[in-house]
Length: 342
Image (cartoon, rainbow, N blue to C red):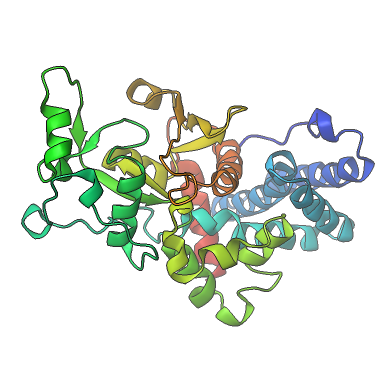
């Protein structure tokens, strides 16, 4: 795991309370490293180092990577409130792990949940794009996928491949792909959720729905970070809203859901850089993508807010697992933390 940088980002160095909070994180990190050197039992050393260092570094890197000033202030306030209590600081880091870092790891086995996919024989044929159904209030994965396909012009927003099943069931789409001048490619596409439906299930059922909107919950933390409407926007069937959906090829969807690739906003509206845990991914996928739509009101592109939160989590994860060649180190540590808290 990468050590915390020696100081806060340049734009925060004039904020004395932020610098003080960050220095407390640095002191906590050093303390955990010193504790490790005093531990002779290998099993105890693994548990201590993975928990103490992860919790201390989560606090420091949140100050570095949270996308809102309100979120940074919230973390600093928490750190300063228990500055002289190491156990309380570690509990604070654990709380952020439990309700923020785990938010994008809601799938229990780490594998993408397959989007509902109808066999060819069970899907209706359409002559034109205009005949494709659009569901105003999608209730399930099938409706969500249809809506995302409609907005994304039946293509993966990263690779540009057309949905193979629709190509052979939509005359207009087939003619585009089959023309002599076309270099169109087809593939198996799936609907990806930025915030997954299982995020709601975990936060409500696993942690108790009575406190789902309290301060000590995923939604509560995100509200404190400057996102007060997220729970309202994404609870229940609203998780299928277009702003939370992307049409992706099955391979990229797998890498996105298993946290190997993510989107980082650029200065150009709706244009993102594809970041990844290893340069090998850039051999297969473009470095930048731009989200487009034919109707910004009815067919909104993926939310920059949702993607920014996802990217903030990924920056934390990337630093905690600097290997880049694999994510096993951090995944093993996080799994152990999840077992220890159950």
